[in-house]
Picture (cartoon, rainbow, N blue to C red):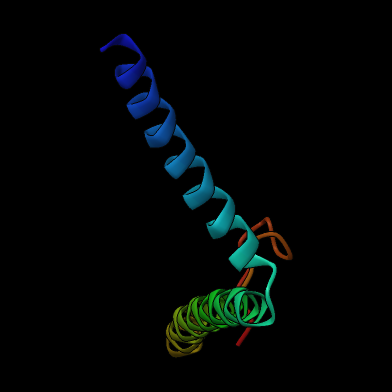
Length: 88
């Protein structure tokens, strides 16, 4: 009975090991490498899209600030004119 128990445990562990090794080996096949590259490219594309969206948002915000400054005849950057003089 004890040998049957150890045989069952050995078979279960062996099956788990074979399954894990097969999964790892699949990652190095041409199909697995292609899937990995596809996933990486999709992630990079999403990151670039997010970056572009952030830049566009920042540009729109800055454009609104510039338009408001021109409408009020104010300077655009306080760093350039720390004394607060207005240019118009």
